Image (tube, rainbow, N blue to C red; front, side, top):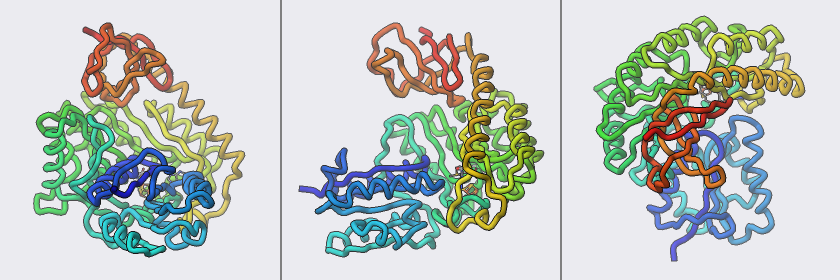
Amino acid sequence: MSKTFYIETFGCQMNAHDSEKVVGTLIGQGYAQVETPEEAELVFYNTCSIRDKAEQKVFHRLQQFKRDGKGKTFAVLGCVAQQEGEKIFDKAPHVSLVCGSASYHKLPELLVQIESGSRRVTGLSLDREDAFETPLTRRDNPHRAYLTIIEGCDKSCAYCVVPFTRGPERSRTSASVIAESLELARAGYTEIQLLGQNVNSYRDPSPAGWNFATLLDRVGRTPGIRRVRFTTSHPRDFGRDIVDAIDSNQALCNHVHLPVQSGSTRVLDAMQRLYTREEYMRRIEWLKSARRSIAISTDVIVGFPGETEADFEATLALLDEVQYDSIFSFKYSRRPNTHALTLEDHIPEEEKTRRLTILQEHQRGIQIRRNAHYVDTTEECHVEGFNQATGQWIGRTSQNKTLNFLHPTARPDLVGGYVPVLVTRAGPNSLAGEAVN
Ligand code: SAM
Ligand code: SF4
């Protein structure tokens, strides 16, 4: 009988994809995946430490098993593993393996150590030069595939733990990315999502020397691939050539996620973001002057140390100016090792909450107005599932909008397909419509 494992993933798409690689590696080593931690001999948590709340989740999970986890082996992977290292063994003595993402290539040998009875095994080195790749990746979605092109981060934003948890930037060769795209198309995938902490900082390490825009365009020309997305782009490295690529290649989705963090140049400077509000707005102008209508989304942090009411209002004004299609917004969270810990004027928690509520309400109004423009248009929808409760199919437009729709015939084979849908209603977070025959 093979050994069983369970894995739970927290955090971003990079983590979700890392887990797909870890699952593939484990299955390759003869382990069998199970659906609950109770059934498993090995329990893996792939963790996130971007904000304090995310970090606490894993310790909460481990606490639940402190008493009734006897006979099981617990492993902490990902960003909390890298950040806390061996301290995890003190906080949760029933953990046997602590491994950061830059050491996943060593998992098979670390597992051998565990199996031979070692109680405290670590993989915490950050000195890996190439990206973690495995031919064994077990992708969760049969139609849309994540594909990492660059790992780590060489920036040093004052609030962020990523450079400490994921190590320095490492790009994959363009040849290996193209080979994997072809492989994915052959396996039946029609949508590829290119991943990286700063996906557009990609620099081909091979003599071909492609930049991100070239790689994006070439992946979009893979026969059989109908949609290509990419996340996350850093504004500093966002060139006009990316907009040109989207304009000239229909397979590239007309959506760009471009995190701004703040609308105040003073705060951007304190955050060490490497661009001003004006420089960011120049990129927005490129996107808005494109021939295709490109949806734009962003990330915003409220309550960074020293953020005044005037700074916050500058962020609200920026939302009005850009008219984002969606935003992810967060209260600033203190993270270990980061420069922001040394700054003065930390904002009280209640004030951060107040600003976050105002920001989200403001953006909700923008989204209601923006989405209303889609009513009476026909959008191509990539079908992701069926909602039994509402009797509607669920899909996504090229602009990354959720579109729920009715289909006149009961066709069980719609998932994974592309369906033209007439939009009949719009809300702040999604569209609704009817399939066009
Ligand atoms: N590399 C991307 C960039 O530079 O825009 C961002 C990647 S980060 C994993 C995702 C988002 O988490 C950031 O854009 C930021 O808004 C948020 N974030 C990161 N550190 C944070 C912190 N200490 N407190 C609150 N939000 C944070
Ligand atoms: Fe974090 Fe900044 Fe790197 Fe993005 S660019 S991962 S926010 S340090």
